[in-house]
Length: 188
Image 1 (cartoon, rainbow, N blue to C red):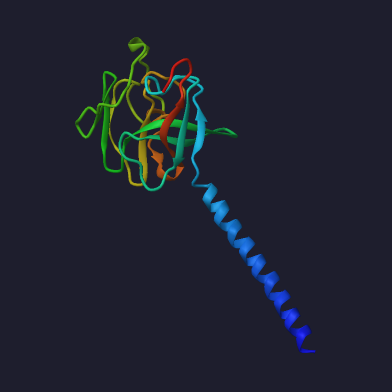
Image 2 (cartoon, rainbow, N blue to C red):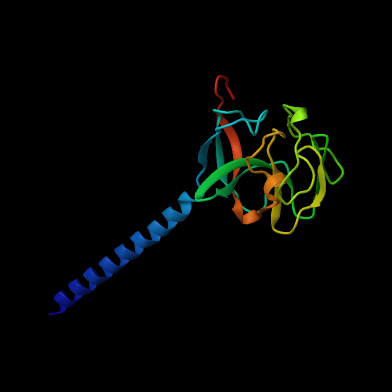
């Protein structure tokens, strides 16, 4: 019976093509979701004056290398915990970074990015891979496939930036900040 064979063939190809379309759509959707922006919440003042505790911001996945001065979200592991931490990318591969009296120098120039020192007398020695104090260190040449990141509040102690943990491997940088969504107690 020729009609039965044709019906089976149509049914088989219909199921196969439907399955292929569903799998292809699923592949596109899951890859597409990784490119969607994410919303983050600042838990402290480490990035003040740019962002303060309680501020919300939107970031998108980082493609390629950040530009100098970009605000990037990095992965930071502390024991079994994984944190997503906002920091400013201040040194790219090959850049020379240093700090003198709390003022950042990148390739012998002081960038105009916002920064602050809350308690200048809080200076203490760094106990990580960078030699010096929290306000006076370097020069350090940023290695290949790494980015030197800093908090905008220079005297934040204990939370990760490159003074304490060294340059961050570029593959640990996840997102680039796009804009401030909401500032606690004030408008963006």
